Length: 314
Image (cartoon, rainbow, N blue to C red):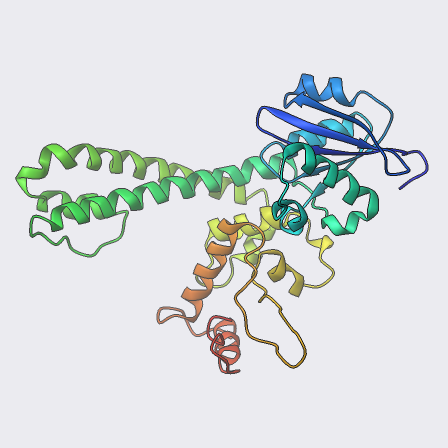
């Protein structure tokens, strides 16, 4: 704790109200209170002497951390995956969680595995990719709904891409299902227009980030994957080694070594699930039957030969 900071404040952020616990330099709780999770409420509660404020990553953590920093406080944004003391507590309340955050921040900040929020522009650009992903997921759900519905009438629609599904299958739908499925087809047409618009927007955004050209060089890595990767990493200098990036996206195997036992476990799945899914999809293409013969593909195939039941997935 720095000399100009004598208090540590744990703030358990809620959607409507947040709990605050203030611990002094001796570890005594000197204040507890509830505040509205609004800009006005936070300003009222934190217009005080500079303190060390500990919050968890969440839906409100981005704007709250920026606000508290503007008020002069030192802010630590804790990684919730490292807070099993809170999530696994048998006495889990917002009031108790706030106190635990304060005490952990007072003891050793590294226990909280502090994270940094990406910049507002990068977050806004990443939101475009996530919006497109939501549109694609909705399209997939509607396509599956149509396929399942017509199958019950003895019709099996031909295999085709989601983008061409409407044009290739609409005329094959039984007449009895017209009333039920016509609105779904109209929704699919509208979704396709929006997805193409998002693709164009992503292409324009990618031009602002030159790093995407390097990331998208391997066949199978498209502009969506490249841009999502670049925006999520944002500052590559914060990784001492390139191998650390895989662990950042949860692609490192879990470890549970004890004595002579060192089993092969599943990956940690830490980090952004969307980017991890995009990276895994690209890797599957590179190593799959349609992947071209490249140095990256040969490197992956050699890794798959190392043995063990998870060798291919590694």
